[in-house]
Length: 188
Image: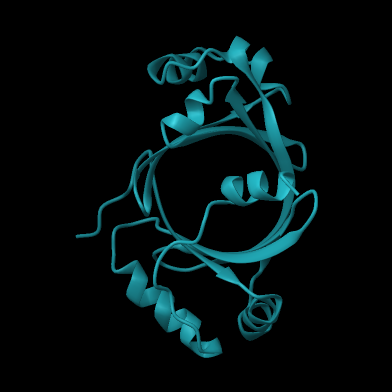
């Protein structure tokens, strides 16, 4: 029996060319499109990066979502997420979020924004996982990726490769995270 992945995010991520992105967008019906702004935070001593994590506020229309992630393995992260009523991470007073930060040794008073970028996300919900086609606009560049985000445990690699077969590409390993790519972009 497939198991729900509570507080875990398992995702397969593949970088796409613009042509591959457009081909997938035109080959399948992606009924949901959202625009989001992602602001990532860290401490001066890079505490979040050192724990292989990410600390983010994501803005989607009038909704702001706090996220704290910590990588477990190449495709699995602990993901703690909650809606908040502020666009400034340092002003969060929610006891549950403050406890999460404390568990990972992060003080909200010592974090600062390190990078911000926007994403146009096209979503196709399948039985086992949403498939997200992302067009990411960084400060100096744009890129394209597909994320397959597990809802239940299953052979996601097989299912993703069946999906990708339509445009003749295959998943082999996860590409770099959006945060990693945004940080590289920022250096240019």
